[in-house]
Length: 297
Image (cartoon, rainbow, N blue to C red; front, side, top):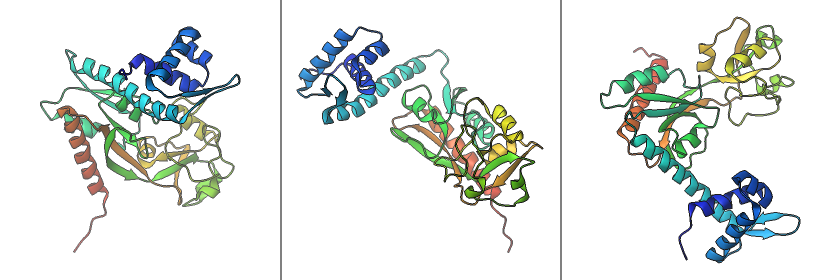
C-alpha cells in the first residue's frame, strides 16, 4: 500500500465532517467530481469502505470512524510542524503563551517577571483567545505554552496544576440574594447566565466566566450583571480584579472550585517552555503558601 498523502486526508476529513460530498467540496473550494474520485481512490488504496453511500445520506463505516480520528491527529501534527518550523526559523523567536484575558489566577505578571529573569529566555508573546481555545492552539503549533482552566482536552499535552480557588456568582448589588451569606445552585433558579441558560438548573460542568452574545467581553458582561439582566460564575481572582459597587460576588456551596493549570505539548523540548513552566510553578507555589493560614506554636 502506498503512503497516504496529506491532501487525501484533508479531503477525507472534510467529507467525514460534513457527511455530504457537495458541502465538503464547497468547503474545500473544489468541484464535487474530483473530490468523489479522490475518496474512491483512497478506499481502493486502503482496501476498505470508508463511507456508506445511499441516495439519501452518507455515513461513516467503522473503518471511516477510525481513520477520521487518526486523520485529525495527523493533520494537527502537520499544521503544528509548519508553525513551529516557522517559529524556530524566525529572526526574533518568541515564547508564545496562550491564555484567555483575565483568566490567569492573578499570576501572569509575576510569572512573566520570573520567566524574564532567565537570560536565555526569548521574549514572551501573549496569544489571546476565547474559553477552551488554548489547548487547540498548543496542539496546532500556534502557541508554545498556555494557561488553561481545568478540565480541558489533554490530547497530546502535558500540564501542571497551578492554583485552585473558589468560584463565585456575580449578581446585581440590589438582588435579594445579597442578603444571604452563602448560596446553593438551587437558589439561582430563574436567574439567567449571559448565554441564556438557567444558572440554577444544575451543577456547571466547567464553572468559569461566561462568554456569550450579545456580550463579547467581561466588561460588557459585568454591565449586564449590574442591571440585573444576568448572573455569571467567575473564579475569585477575577472577582478581586473587578470590584464594582453595583455588583456583589457571593460564594455558592455546591459550585466546584476552579483550577488553573500550565499546559504544553508533550513533545516540547524548548528550554523556553521549560523556563516558563518552572516560573509558573514557582510563582503559584509561593501564592498558595501565602494564602495558607499561619500557625503558632
